Image (tube, rainbow, N blue to C red; front, side, top):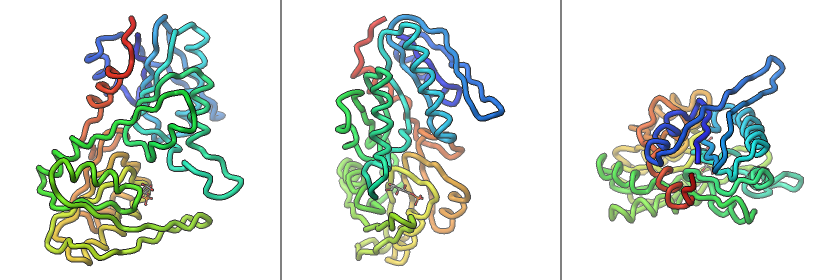
Length: 292
Ligand code: R5P
């Protein structure tokens, strides 16, 4: 078994190799002036564990990954496993308008075609996408213990999800520390992309509230939710987010309202404070038969 890693995930790969006690190969990467990409790796026999961060430059990274899978397969690896801390395209988990693809399914089918047996990822947008394919097996790691420890440490009194989709996340963390949880309702116009948050009455007056969500992209969702909580009398609002994509001025927008933002390192960002390497490695060790 050997870990093949893209440079942007070196930290995760090194940690993983240390714990699993296996060899490590950095993938060579090239980008040509015309936009095409190329990869190269000295392939050995045995199972290949491929580790890469998919954000930013999502489409380039996907292309590099597909090229690597094909090259490793041509060179005779016996099996392939992906460790992608952030799984892109997962939000298009349904056909919202006729004529659209189900992009999450497209990606999984592509990996199946390349003989990938497992994908290990963190806090995938919706776990149900695994049912689109019989293989690869999607192993989703949700860092509920890490989030609960953080929430306890910073004195969170109630957890709130900015939409119904993250209610399960709020519940999982809240149950661990014995506090309450609630949610807002969010509506998205599928043609324009405009989002509207419907404020529900909730008892947050004078409390430290943590908003919990899988992704911050433009920051609009969390900003609206934060403002709503403050209008309901929340004393302090903190965000706990798995994938901090932070597009454009998202950080600046969030700081207009938030008292604190905590991110994992599934996506590299200067404020990442929750390390996902260990829970991801544990998941690999628990699910993969460690053949040499
Ligand atoms: C959507 O359902 C996700 O869980 C996030 O709430 C969303 O992607 C956040 O996007 P933005 O930061 O652009 O509002």
